[in-house]
Image (cartoon, rainbow, N blue to C red):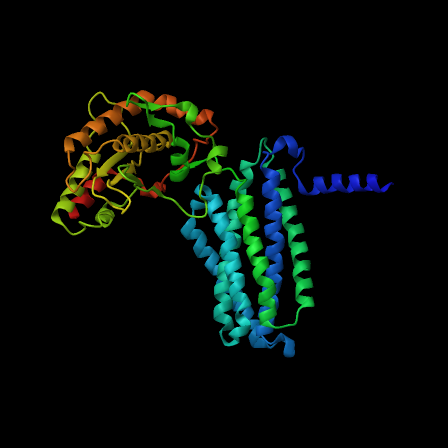
Length: 444
């Protein structure tokens, strides 16, 4: 066999081992870039792990003789604490693995490197080995759990056909190969350095930073087709605007696709509400009623502020007018400024326990429509509302606009490729019952 033929044979074998079958037609174009940077992230992550393990063994005195029994017990205990921390974390995060997979995947890399950093410091504080090792192991278990939980959500976005199993298997092969290469790389670095904590840290720092960079770069190519607050806001950006005549219009052609939104999404931070800016009010989803006063920074303890909250609640949860299609979401408005960059307040959006996916999507759409109307209204802010009649007029216009465009909007969202079978605007446990709302408000 010639060298060129042997090279082609290795390439074919490597493709079969590490890439999904017929990958050119079964996965999205972004998949190869994602896999490449994840490979870099995993290689360097494994290398940094080798150096951290070497540092921990050094702290336990492995270089001075046989490993004592107490050191072995400490090692087992720290692993136990780490596993317990992973269980607690999974309980606390829950559905966020599905709503914000890129956010949690990015921070899983940060947690892993932070935990590894702690392990690197154990030789400097050998008397605190159990404490530092336990905290580090909790961080590692949280990271591994987050990586595992978000893997399916992210891998699914690359599938063009029903080949999630094949893609997941190849992802496992890539991770294994990256781990082996990274381990060998870490061993090589450790073997060529003097055994001291300072030289190990010197080798660890650039590897750790490069690993985080690889994780970040890979997630730029991951596309999330489900909607949460940030993605829905970006999807609707520029699609609801005032035309030259000053009339509000919905332009379905400007509704953004999941691929377009993925390039704009700031996944490094979590965004659960829309910030107010200028005359444009913020949008806060599923705010607890008994915490509304915390949003009124300048009038938190004033009687006027409490009266405004009570008025807002009664207006937001008033019965649906006769002849109007019943909706399972509620929107209220507090006009008091809540941020230094805003002269307006917040729109508050709640979902009824009976709300379905379409109701939650239309509820957020309705809030965005109101936000756009408020952005051109100079008479809708202040402690009491400079002109309550103007607020009422905007609410009426928004209601009519949503009723006229709801079906077109929903169909356009589906046509743009968004997954409308699952919504992530709020936890289901935060959906409300009107009777409970009035009871809570009455206690304030």
